[in-house]
Amino acid sequence: MIIHALSEIKNETLDQLVKTMEDLWSKLGVSGILVNNVHRLRKPKDGHTRPAIVKLVRYIDKRLIMSNKSKVLVEKIFIYDDKTKDEQQNYKLLRTKLQELKATEPTLIGTFRGTDLLVKKTVKPLYHFQIENGVIKSL
Image 1 (cartoon, rainbow, N blue to C red):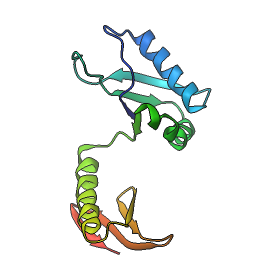
Image 2: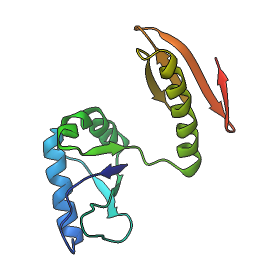
Image 3: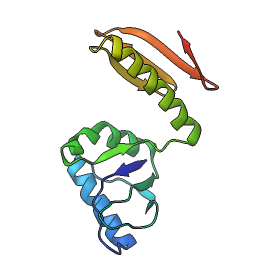
């Protein structure tokens, strides 16, 4: 899991980062989260907070966090799945496809599910796209 815009202290220690994570869990309204590893990406830079990578012990904890992540959007803290380079590229292609569709029909809503992009105007999907080996297929 990757967390963007999580507050960072200058010369932050691991103990301070763990405390920051515990504060985040309480804002999300979850408890008992078992963290296997947590660290910041990149070198520190003045005026910028570095993303934090969190590896959890239990998958159920991740699901619990992801289902409550909207509670910290107001603070501009963003929680995402940590994706591989290939997954990032596929997501970018699908996002571009969604933007093309929205240019013609602004009321469309897109939902990403793994390698699928579901586009809907109402409750039921209007388009269903899947990506395989960098090629977008309509289902």
